[in-house]
Image (cartoon, rainbow, N blue to C red; front, side, top):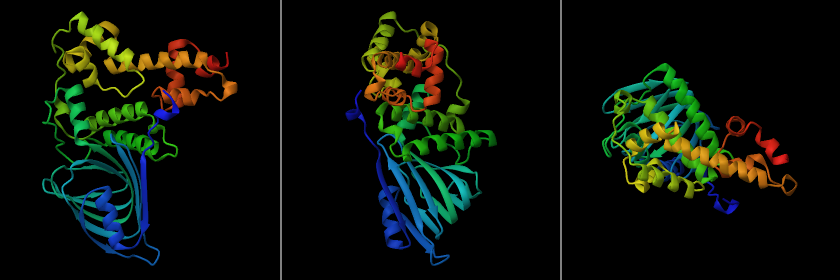
Length: 326
């Protein structure tokens, strides 16, 4: 992969007290709304930073303008964490819910949602419907098109803390400049991790879905096709569904076959292959010509330098910086 292969997120921002400007920005960025604003002071403003990729988007919202709104139905999953202020969300199934600082929630899809905001600071993640649906099918055997989230709040206080950490990591990576998620490999890996975390955090069928060990046998030829596909496409964003399609078998059966033969999942095997590619690139690189561990790791989908260093040392017995210098 080269620098030319990077795809930086699309960014936009607003800081305004003009109602028409704010409403139009919300419509273009999130969804249409019917809003009413209350100026709390002459300096009160509504401010948003947004960073968007086709697979995931992140936003930071700070508003000292108080407002209430009713949205049009959402056609994607919108998750948010409240860092400050008071938020009330109103949905057809759960009525009014007060969300204090530290709370997390997801907006239901396909129905209007009401909000009342006072002096708020929020972090937001947005995921396309098909990405969560895909992960539900691949990882939890939820039939395609049947995934739904059955509540707007996390299933427990512990999972809420976990979800806040996930949002902090993904939101920060999206809004950093330059963003590590300009790498399609990093963006794909982060999106998958966020989707899996969401399905563990918010009420849905995946939480009570039994693990189906007997997903059916996978022929050795199919396993070889899966490995060949991974080897040939390690420098590209790859999903479990794509690997299973190349192998000619089901995603769940392929996961069980990989665990049996390689002691890991197909995605875990993919990370091993990418780690080996990063190792070979470090061996061939010249630090006097500007090569860095961070840049090489990012090219192969490793966004967190400390995690890359730990995985590299476990696999090769030395730190990546040692390989680069030797």
